[in-house]
Length: 91
Image (cartoon, rainbow, N blue to C red):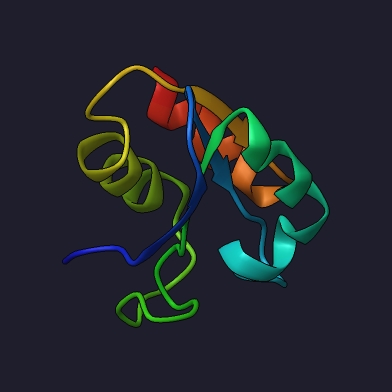
């Protein structure tokens, strides 16, 4: 299962994990000015955007993000439900 991810900008990577309601592209719209200095990477968790369908599951989402998105050093930020996913992915 491969997650779809949006990417903007250049510089050090910041991985942005969205919550329940909005997908990666919409949840992080206000952070787009950061792309002048940072690479923003917003994966779409299962059941959101162009990622495969799936149920809301902290551990499954965290495992996919850890394996597919955190393959190199990055800052990791989570919003709402995404904060729990980010915490588990970091662990």
